[in-house]
Amino acid sequence: MKKILAILLVLALVGISVISSVKSVTNPFSECAELFIKSHQEAITSLGGAELASPMVYKDKDGKDRVIVYGVKKGEEIIGRIVVNYDRENPIVLEFAELVPPHLLDVKEEIFNKTSLEKNMAFGNPEFIYVFPLLYYVHFNVYDKNQAVEDIYFFWNEKRIVTLTDIPDFPILVNDKFPLMEQATSESYKILYDVPDYTTSTNSLCNNCGPVAGANILGYWHKHGYYYLQHDWDESNGNGLITCLWYDMNTSCIYGTPASNFRSGIVYHANTVHNDYLGIYHFSTSGNSYPEFSDAVSEINASRPFGILIHWNIFSWHWITCIGYDSQYGNYICVRDGWGDGTVYINWYNPYLSGSISIEGFNYVYPSY
Image (cartoon, rainbow, N blue to C red; front, side, top):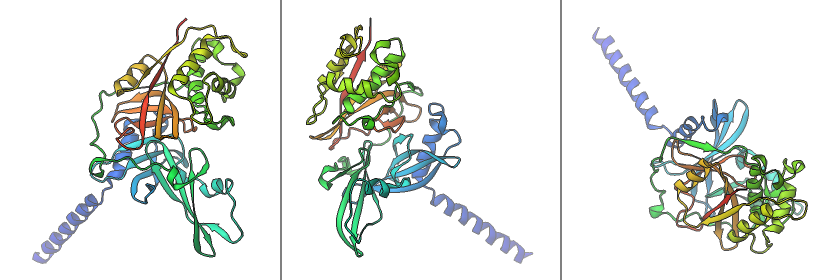
């Protein structure tokens, strides 16, 4: 009997040890991403029944681990990506998008079409670089007979070759840490799903992200009683409206579309008869250089999408369109990013850290007769 009790005691201790070891290897990154999926299924219905798949660590330009990017899988299909900052003590979902992450796509084929290799040269394995917010790069070593002879850097969002100096530095953080997750201001959300998702690849006009964001906004109002802002035949890709706005905003191939041009171009297009557009309305605009999350909530609650200008160095600016907010777990703004990524969530408390990346302001559009 004593022998049996001793065996049972040993088995019990082994069981406790196994349980403890399981607990000790829990993954805070995947737990954070899974909580995001669970918490936002009401706003993003496609997340119902979704699970994480194929995580990959993305680095900064200096090779330091910065984020973990997960595929979001539903059935056999990858329906999105989730980005979690690489901090075991304070994992935060920085971004969600309804698009397959680069590491689950054939990046070699994409880059091969943009460059040419000499005979006997070959690409090495890709290394993935992430710069918050939204910016993805791919690094390849080029080999000649097993010897690395060249580095190629590819700006994934815009599908073009860049240099290492073109890639922004990862935002400078206090003690190299992200701030602790802020508490949500409320348990609510609102997303204007019918805002178009036009892209900069629609036409060949240079620096066309401002006109694309403007077309997203005016395409939305076209559906909501302001019929003459856009032609019906143009609703699918917005190419006609984007082209017209490019000229209305006096977009430059050198400096793009400044905020003042963005706003004046929208007003001109909506209120002035020109080209084939019957501008008979009374739209007005304004800018907000120091926006708060509550400002985004107010505009979206009034069902008004608006433009956001971000920048990551003196030569690199990009317009995106805010279409919603979600504060069910954390505070996120929901945007169309101009690169065709569907609905994109950006963690409000991390996009404009005191580094090389910042949100330059909100640009509101107010329609009226």
